[in-house]
Length: 457
Image (cartoon, rainbow, N blue to C red; front, side, top):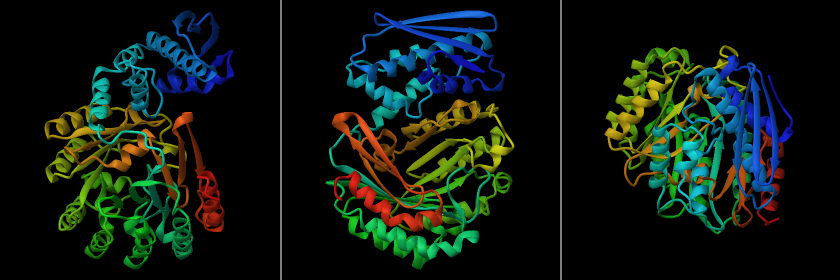
């Protein structure tokens, strides 16, 4: 249990308490601000911890930002002292550590001292530094620049760790035709919402679960937004739905990148998580894809149900041996909506540290560089998701979305459009209905609301 005398701090402090799991002691927190001094007092297990930080704030927004940071640090330091445990990202609980790093640099300061103060592990400070280096030439705020996202929320089956709003195609096929019609209409309404389109990304779900004629409808709807040289990604998805005909369709419409999502090369793991493909299917799909001029990303997940450290490490080795342009290493994250969440209330992350350390070591040694990262609540071991790239092969869409440096024009059920107001330092979001039938019914309203958000109504 946590008590605090300042309501706006409570959610932030609870994020820190959750890092330490169900065994975290009860805490009492009090906050006082006077003469540019932030005073945080934490009482737990009969001990009192007092932390004082000084910072001159320019406005109320900056005051609240630093009040949250220093309060979280106070609670983290108290829990660290009481439990003897440290977290890989220290007291940082936000999902985008790189945004903090960029913020420090924009104020003319190196980010490393702040990260050290907040207890971030040295290897993670290096990771952030390498990500920022890899984003040079991509990172930058450009008024009117945008990326287009198109969502296909259908899959061959529901994985037990998945909390995305995706639907088993076998149970929702009756909605597919109407969904595609609604999606086509929404995509068409996106014309004129930007001055410069940087990339197109068709994600899921599993876009390749669509039949070729259905996939063509989506690609045809996106065609007006394509141009020579634009980055165009399709998250093709699970290896068991790959066909040469679908890959040829992507090439016909100018797609430049695809994602193959094996998650693991261990057949036993694939069965446990509810997949309907084998490791052999991964190799078959990859070989098919390599017949076309696509850049390829492979996804892996550390911490899948019952998977041992050696099994995960073997998946890393197998992925590297295929030599894809990108490899993404996710850490298992269980949210409300994942079947596995019902079975595991807290993720201790046993073995995750070894998995992540091995993946980093092998990927660095193989010539890959981390180019984006993000974190989520309820991640096993409190680690992160990291995208790794061959030199010059970073995915622009991933950088733009993770760093929130462009408008994101998003279409489809559960898609979230983001309008960036760079001069005001804020982002406005517009979310589509999560439920597929509700989205179909409201797609025209969603498109109209989007045009109003972009001043094009």
